[in-house]
Image (cartoon, rainbow, N blue to C red):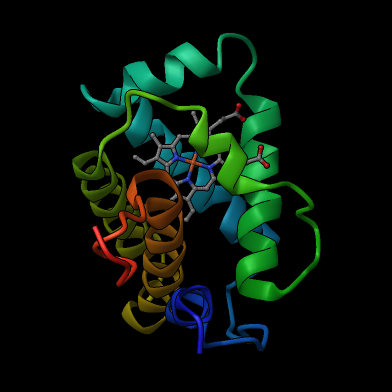
Length: 149
Ligand code: HEM
């Protein structure tokens, strides 16, 4: 067993099946995405980070994120991007910013979906956030790799 395989197992989504629940479709997921990024843009910490990256029309980002969440939740296969490089280039983002992101996401999901469904979105978001944080903030040092100093 390698360290890499342990990390991959830790972040692999548990549910590989599409979520089949009434009211969970591209339309409702699109509403979630729009309501969530409205909160993000109003947030004093996250708003400026996004404003620096998305300087023009927000519509392409909102459509891309709707594709992303439809792929994650409905297994639609609509999203073909690469989230890790997109976040690695954001040098001013901290782990605490992820807490804000996750709080706003959980709040939005709870406003728009039944509690059991919101919990599925939150669980997926947490797993993906963990994997992004590993890519952004985890640095293998000789000591943590078990090697000699
Ligand atoms: C503090 C936390 C986060 C910040 C500041 C952040 C910020 C950003 C920014 C600025 C972009 C680029 C927007 C664009 O040019 O289209 C982006 C893209 C994206 N983000 Fe995040 N993000 C965060 C957390 C997350 C999390 C937790 C997820 C998933 C659950 C996520 C999923 C994505 C995806 C799928 C993209 C599109 C990547 C691509 O294909 O280009 N982000 N994010």
